[in-house]
Image 1 (cartoon, rainbow, N blue to C red):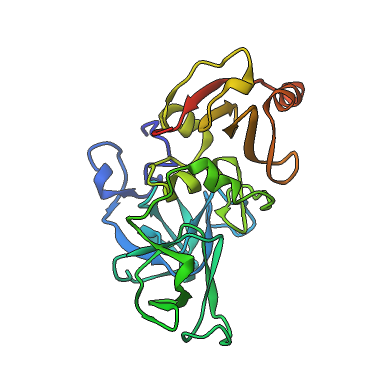
Image 2 (cartoon, rainbow, N blue to C red):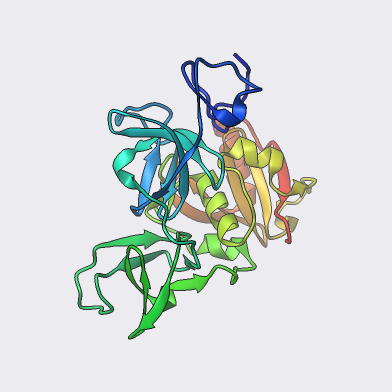
Length: 284
């Protein structure tokens, strides 16, 4: 069997995506069945086992190409970032109308009608993309419920400062594999704010270190790192805010924090490998 990265190539010992027919050998191949996430967020795991931690998370509106279903799980590949895994089948449904808006606030409640007094039927997390139309009393109608219009932005309206978007997540809990406004990890934070800003970012920190932005030399004085620089350690990433500070989702505080770069570098080096590389986000 080939050594392709199983995180981004849909193949198992018994099955592979039909697109990989000429690349990997498998007993059978399957065409993708596109489905869409109908809940606020749902975990994607490396095996069909609810006791396993998250590998990553899918958020409302993401398209998930399904190749197999069994025992309440769907095995497939997220179309947005190519991540492969198992998610609960009940979180998926048929494709919705093409998205027109994204959630610009950390969360937006879904209401059964255009009224703040109605009991919410759920919520959409930051970055969720959804079709929205027919504004009534300050609310937009979506296939999943009514949303307060000011919590949404047209897809064409993108923030220009991903670091500023990350700063809105200060205090959000750390969650391994998470990428929603209820909890996220270091690379999930980076991917989430990049995606909202129109920057295509892979999911994990090792992928981001290889593919996101462009290489940048580490200065002698970290206070000179520009806003939008990505700092990489083995298994960890942070964003420079400029002025010698960085923001990251970290298990050190189990939350998203902003802190001075210099003492953070010393603390992390005392715990394990030191800073490995620096890159600069596109457009920064």
